[in-house]
Image 1 (cartoon, rainbow, N blue to C red):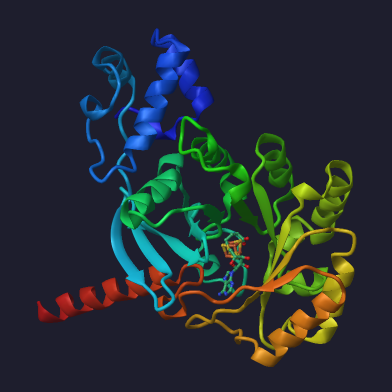
Image 2 (cartoon, helix red, strand yellow; image 1 turned 135 degrees about the vertical axis):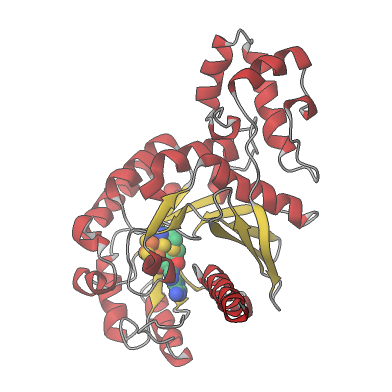
Length: 361
Ligand code: SAH
Ligand code: SF4
């Protein structure tokens, strides 16, 4: 089978195009036509349907195939208009993408892997283990499919906060980011994209070297000891090292490139005022907004949602200590919007259908 055109970065495509005897202008036009076409209501299934000179396309068609878009397996709209898509990939695996409208913004949250290898104790995706990395056409495909489905609802921002650890799938994520942000791709401004990571330091450095997207760091513990209790990755990449790097970087390049921090509040585990004080100490000198995310429980998880009082007190403590802090409302709770949970429900439904079929034979 031919490789997919949609898996090529622009740089890789330009090199291929030169070998095919296409000029740079022709190559750029084809790149744009192919990527724009994947957001059309009727996605082109053959090269003849792409808006570019047929003679040039014939040459491309000998080397590359058009990738299929993920299929919508399930779509749920929650009471707060969060729209959750369960998207089916060519090998039968599913991933999630979630659209979160808020004021003038519309944020699309995409997945980067099927499952995740990082095994954070509170995370449902972590419990699945890693099945596989997503390829660029499957990551950008979530954006293209969502654009189609959303019609007039605009996607103004993107976050890599769905299933998976984006920086564990660095090459494919970098290619996707190039396709998403380049003007000849989808033209999403890089500063409107946030990549969330559990803290893979070497990959964070590469991300900063190669892109200008925003970084969101999942902190989740007020100090290294408590973090290690819920995030095994702390052993390989200590948070103190990541923070030291970010501290030095913000001194070198200034505040406009500051990271953002995520802190999942686990009831009775990391949500006391003592924890808040530790967190302030640990983040000292590292600028960046802190997003508090009240834990969204899932069946079988040993943690509790924090009480509203604990969330308010934690929030107030950070504010009183001059941290820019927000509580992320759990959006779309009624459609199970936390990481990996629609997928889980779908798997259960498949299981019960299978059980039903078995019992009738
Ligand atoms: N792997 C990346 C991105 C995906 S997880 C990372 O960990 O940053 C995105 C965010 O969801 C992370 O901050 C994670 O801590 C949080 N999260 C995972 N499971 C959650 C749950 N059940 N409730 C609330 N937040 C959760
Ligand atoms: Fe993976 Fe992020 Fe879940 Fe941790 S929180 S298991 S890194 S998806």
